[in-house]
Length: 166
Image (cartoon, rainbow, N blue to C red; front, side, top):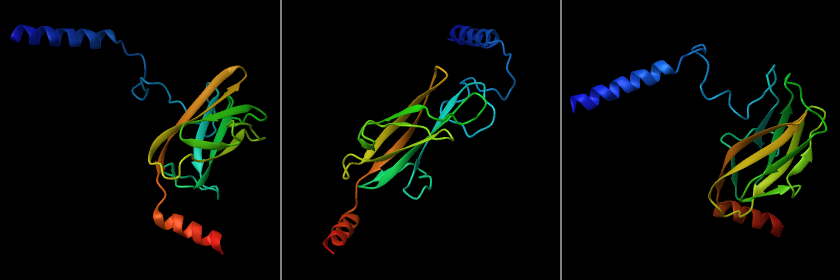
């Protein structure tokens, strides 16, 4: 057993030594992440995605409840951190309905695109992933956001029915 332990330690040390190094202590071995982007200079184009309520407030944590409408906001940035105008972005996900139904739209002058979203089933509960994809000068970029799906409460449904009766 001591021999196996000694061999295991030796192999582990050799593996670590063969890694080399080369990066500074702050570098992540996993890259810089996929969907960020809030301006500034980057080496590559990027795309960010957020979920907002109808008033424009970011939903944190991102969630859709019942028949609530929300807006998927996509920001497409070039390598210099500037918004990319007039570019096609496609938003997709399961268990949700998009407006426009294709989930495709064009970015505005600031590189921002908006697609309305709601839960396909207002009584569903669980989660889904909403993804967005675009392209900047032939370079594909994408990002995604996990969204909780919560069932509509009986009180909210009754309040909605009551409003429609008036």
